[in-house]
Length: 349
Image (cartoon, rainbow, N blue to C red):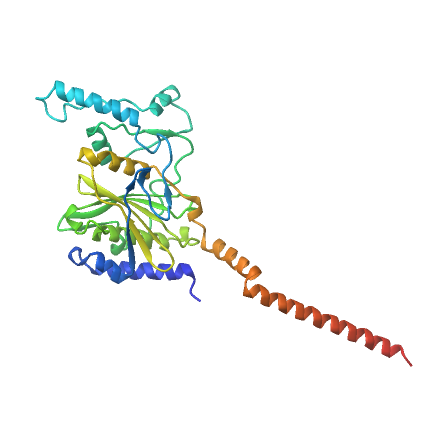
């Protein structure tokens, strides 16, 4: 019988081959539905960034994974004051150095503190954070991140397979490219964070994943499921930080339920607009520094063994086994009585 992991891998291979056959113009929401891919739309909530269901990636609380409101207010007032004083200068010359976050001052006192973990954000995030006067946390106090760069996927099978390369070019122009994949080097957690750079012209429908985003998701899923390091997992949650062009982006989460692939996507954030820049940067920063949710990566063997154990104890199989045990015990008792009477009769003359 085919195991659940084999079924999931077979479906991922099927979806990957189907998507590779289609071009950007033939790719839409109806196309995804025909392939059996479930698309769900998620938006920013009042409590924080985009919330996915189920939550495979949880943002860490505190200044580590969110923009500091106090620093943003001070930086915004400083940048506006400098802009009014030098109205004739260029926009780049009106920017002033941003105030350092509180964690950075703590690090200066103890530069060799082993608890300090540096966070290097993508260049596009740092660029627009500086433009809008937002201060990004540069480090955190605590254990190292679970998901790191240069894991098994970036060194894996896709280098030898053209259809699994994490980039695509056309006539010396890069259509899309995965700049990095963050994953667990110990291979205990199958989660992955993918940073994707895609051409804005490939995004035709803003309410569903684009052709380039689906290609990146399926190539990463197929590559990671092919690696022997993750052979004991069947769930491979993927979080995609998709940068569309140079001024916008959105966040996607993909996972396979065992029956179909589910892709959740947020709305497209505009980094260049001051009205939406804070929500956009806040979501991207928090998810870039997020941690995998522990309850989401039970391996298939542990989960199925536990399910079968409970099913065998309380379900129909348990009743059948108990009845079989009772029948066998009755038979043994009868056989013991027969042997005892036979021994008695032998001694009777």
